[in-house]
Length: 75
Image 1 (cartoon, rainbow, N blue to C red):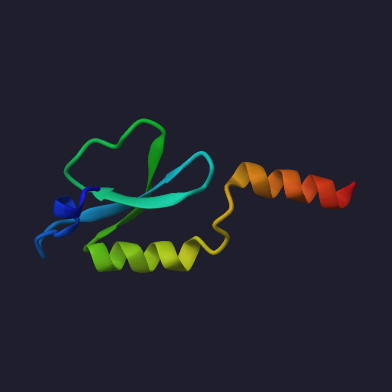
Image 2 (image 1 turned 90 degrees about the vertical axis):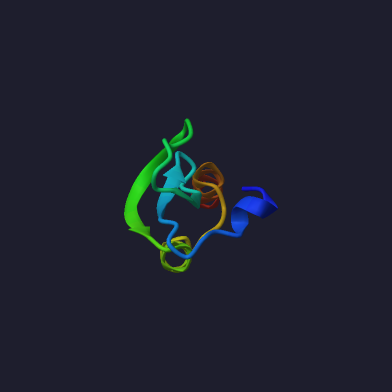
């Protein structure tokens, strides 16, 4: 999002989205999702969506890196 887009109106609605690497972001509710992103199920204000992302995205490493590290430690 550009700096101008970050200055959202209070009534702007967002949704939480995630990609195949289990990385989270927020996206405008009224816009089509970008390729590679799926709606997580949470929709609300920017602050509500960011709170949800903080709650669920506790490991910021991409899923593929977590899998590789887990496999390496098991070997």
